[in-house]
Amino acid sequence: MRDLCQQVEGGLSYLRRLAHGRLDIVGGELARRRAGGDPADLADLVARLPKLLSENDGGSTRVPRSPRRVDMGEPSVELESELDDIVRVDDLTGLTELSDADLQGAADALVAFERTVSDRRRRVHERIDTLQAEIARRYRDGEADIESMLQ
Image 1 (cartoon, one colour):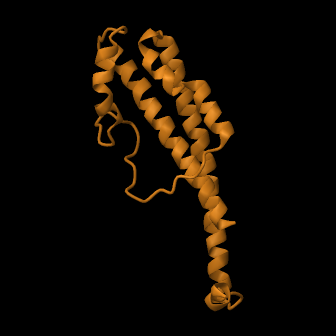
Image 2 (image 1 turned 90 degrees about the horizontal axis):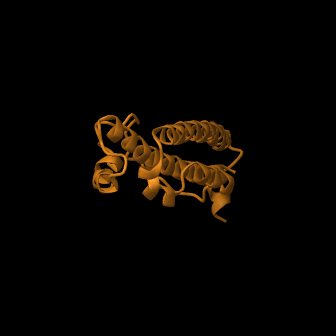
Image 3 (image 1 turned 90 degrees about the vertical axis):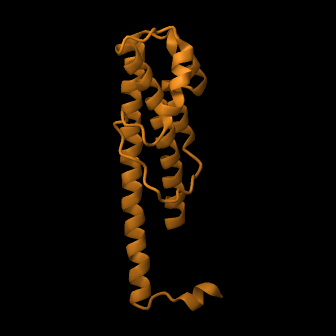
């Protein structure tokens, strides 16, 4: 059960990273426009992508990612579809064609999606912690032992 929860957590973590990347791009385009950038200038948006997507971008509102190893599980098909309904990867090349209001709507929807996924991920972490504590208790109290698991 713990292993299954860890796989679910990996899928949720992956989806969060996808949402963050899309939000960084959409937010970067909004910021570029607010700074006087031409909404039709796709070349400028593309040139800014490495900075927008870097973990150390000073303009990012996200907490820097931890250096921990992440086992990427398969994301939930429903959640992945929901993310794609907000902003598909293919739609990112057409951001310059969207109005400021549509971009802001996409950013707001991505933020709400990220919160939903983060809440689910937090609940899965709580479940993993509970399961881990039960496993430790069973070993501590002698209900389980390594030798029997290896046979």
